[in-house]
Length: 496
Image (cartoon, rainbow, N blue to C red):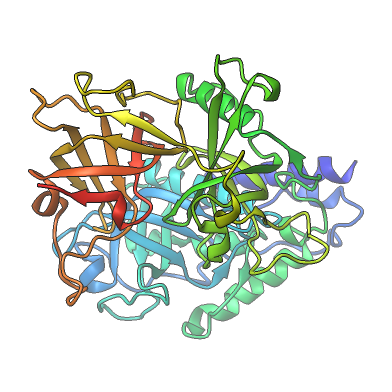
């Protein structure tokens, strides 16, 4: 049997069996014994996930995660192999989403800097959580042996968490829960990391990792990762990407042909906010446009959580970026896995982003174009009105010529992001023509950063001048909503 065929069957067996309930084994013994590179058939796999080696010692019934460090949850959204967000079911203290970084494991990256087996780990974790959320039970606990207030990790926003699941029983008793963190290691989709603070679990985690290595599961197999792109980067125009994005927006069943592809794109920086870099380019009939007078196309690039040199983020900088295109159910289409060096290497590494024209020097062909829109049809000038569903300026810089009025607002569950619903100033009715999504954290008092507030108290009833980048997001129901994303504080100006 060919290596890749065998490996795909191992992945399929692991994923399929993991959804069958707590009695499932992580890999097929038939597949393992048929490989010339597999360990001797005399080695019997131990199912650490189910055999009681690790168990939850605290009852979660009625407990509040934010007060007790343990609580039953529903899945809000999976992020990657070792990160997910949950909604607490007991909300006595807080109803904020619990952002969990899984204790004791370190899966390959699948969002910022994409690594081999990162996508496999992300898909595996998401499948287990979705199964438990639909058919069973999920409990999140802090790495403590007693009830107490949970502690943030070094980011200050996430909680290091043990994720306990039962795949088949709703509200399962705590004695029938199993540790997903360990299951991920057992399937060979994570390394063990930082387990010294829970010595009663550490030996089992290391044993599961050693077994995954011996049985050559997944990232320890020595085989190519089926979902990782090993090929060269393909030069792709932003216009071709835009056409695929728009096709998917219009038809959710459309398969974006660039999903998973390694691409190299060039464009002018339209903005940078919330770890997202937006670039745009102009296209005429000679460069692929079929629109009279030409058109613009843009894309968003997830830069990862690390700091990015300002030489790449300055508006009007013309850059080249290489990365992996992903069409995500959670985030829509984006490019990830790009590398942003502090200085250009010599010679230029094709994997690294490169500044082609500095912002100050970009005054001609590639200088930034900003779309101008009116806020009412009656306003003077030839600019169009920005309406819901307009993709002409998607991921490009936009400016609203006129004031807008905030008539409603929504805070994210962690109060760090805010959506403002806007209409033309003094327009009759409450016709929504776009939403404004503030990706930076607004602080009403610079001297008191801990002061809390709601978007309604700060924005509703006021009039603003707005500019930023036109984007979109996909709601939990699958609907597409368009947004303007401010890049800096001057993009949202209070006028009344």
